[in-house]
Image 1 (cartoon, rainbow, N blue to C red):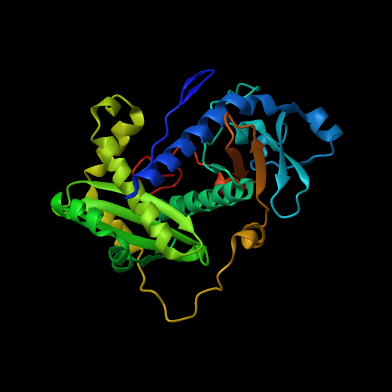
Image 2 (cartoon, rainbow, N blue to C red; image 1 turned 180 degrees about the vertical axis):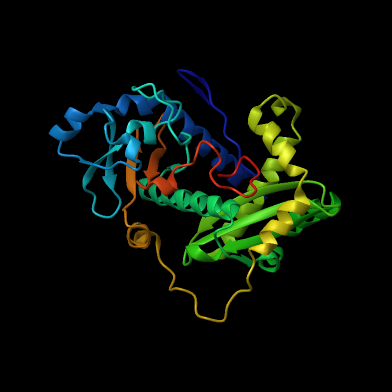
Length: 322
């Protein structure tokens, strides 16, 4: 996708090509809109106060932030403000300080329906927070490999088998009733592992999303064009430790309990669930889009939802799914 500052790429994997194209286009739209138009949204602290915005700081270092981005509460619709350093991508802090987290597009979603984009963004925030806890070893994983195997379309199952690949899957118990899933796609000789994650209101779509993401990572690692990228190099190094990853993840396993699961929630109930679980309501930033698709960035204003620059307190991690 061409934009003012250059060309933006999006990637996606799906067993239905049309769905993959839609998702890839959406990813390119997200990044282009956030980078091209995000800076145009920035206002001063003074203007934010004049507008009556409730200001939320996800980290204490931002208490003195001067640049803000208008947002709205996902629970009440109240006008709010988020520090630009926590909301935008490729932004240099106006105070020229090194921030303790990495700026990213996590929480940004594109969809023709703005409400759907907002829900997708919130789900991605929850997914990444849960997966970071996996790498830190502070969650319980419920095995879901058998459930995933029943969902894989025959064509994809054959493609995996022909390449001697096998998929392992888990669900993060602590995020119930939201289904956060992790899939490891590895070789039968346990020589190379790639990962994907998903989040949703039901398990099936979340598992398939995670599988598709893990397959896409394999394709990326196999593309020689990427071999000079630092993220590629980290991913390639970590992929060789498949046995260590499997051992670590299985150590976190506990069988699915017989106790009843928490009651399922609907997309409209998601913001209230987040506020109840984490003590803060999600904020939604309506990013001006580079095309007709609505772009929304969700921010959960709490430090635990920021991606640590140093890699956090991870025991193991692949280097690209945080």
